[in-house]
Image (cartoon, helix red, strand yellow):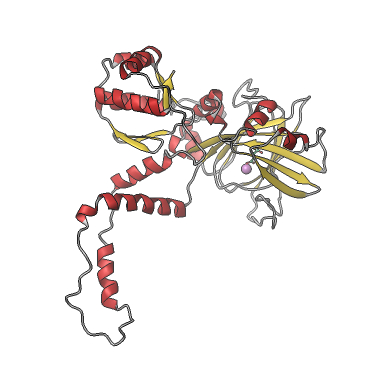
Length: 395
Ligand code: SIN
Ligand code: CO
């Protein structure tokens, strides 16, 4: 369904189009009661449990007597035992866990509410827990973020300051000076959208006996330098495939005597320049690069292969139950090429429509599969391969 003209409570009554035109990447937006009755997706103990897992990225940030410290997980019980049980103004702390959407289906569903932003821009859902006063201090991020309040409350201060000097030697980026321009106390279900580079400072405020938990829906914006480096790597792989068209070799039948035999002369530079001009790329190659690069799993992501069954058996079960992407899978498409976890596949017609649905909604209902019955053999083989690789599962 196209939601572009529908006003969303999630956006404080704006349509996605209005939000994109007026706020996205431009200015902050406070949305009271963005998700009514939002009590959060997991309890503090469950978050701490995740932070103890080997493949989960987590941090504990502490401010002890005004000095900042950061530790990376996985953590053990002893790490939590060292933290003050009661709020202590001299020892504040917070626990932050990245990519919670890779572990919790509810977190992945929450992210789908932000489908008005392309999946290619989405990074992950980070969840933080902090007793009274805790947080990561005043800072700015390079990314857009929606900060959704779970249990407890958080006082958000923002600043329009241009002084972005950081505290020297701190293990995380803390602004040396912070001049509050505006502040809001966010309660359960409230949300604050912040564009990149806007200075902000979130301070946990406990409410009743609930400590603060904040859900950060974060977006990725690769550095230009990273895009270029990655693209050159992609092109290098491609050049080795295309070497058939690059069969020439350096030639200098026109060589003239030079005064210094050790000198790399201008004529040589010119010849190599001409050879290098053969490197070119099309928009299609850029699209292929983006599909591969943006669907590439983060280095710590592992997929668990599904138990081997016959292709027929798989087809029957998929038709009955439907299919879903693994929580860690990233599926994107451009034109008729589909990218899942950096693997590309081309499909057209009904098969392409089915795969678009799977990519957009992260699931393919049984009725969509049965409506396309019998599945094109090439598509069935592809889905079966993805199933065996653990990229997709039965719904
Ligand atoms: C948080 O502490 O939950 C949010 C961190 C941030 O300000 O980016
Ligand atoms: Co931030």
